[in-house]
Amino acid sequence: MTKFDIQAAARADLREIYAFSVDRFGRPVADSYLLGLRGCFDRLLDFPAIGRIYPGVTPEIPVLSYRRHRVFYRVVDDQLLVVRILHERRNIGEKL
Image (cartoon, rainbow, N blue to C red; front, side, top):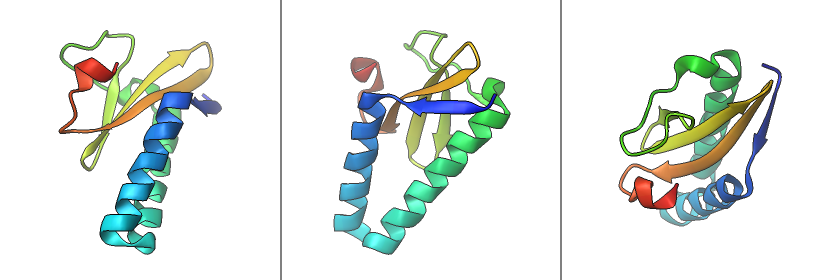
């Protein structure tokens, strides 16, 4: 797989994660966390079947965990679509 797209809701999630992290932990930590999420996307590009089924979420949207966040994605044709990036404490079924 060679390309990925971050859907609008996931982009909003990233902005929220970054703003919260800057406020709570500082810019260097926030930057590092986003780099880690980018590494998660790269891992999904290399191994799209690595995700697991999340209880209560359709099997067409698997999930890969990164620290305390869950990256929900879909594979459509030859493209990885990042659907949402949600904190583990959020009501995930409600957001998808």
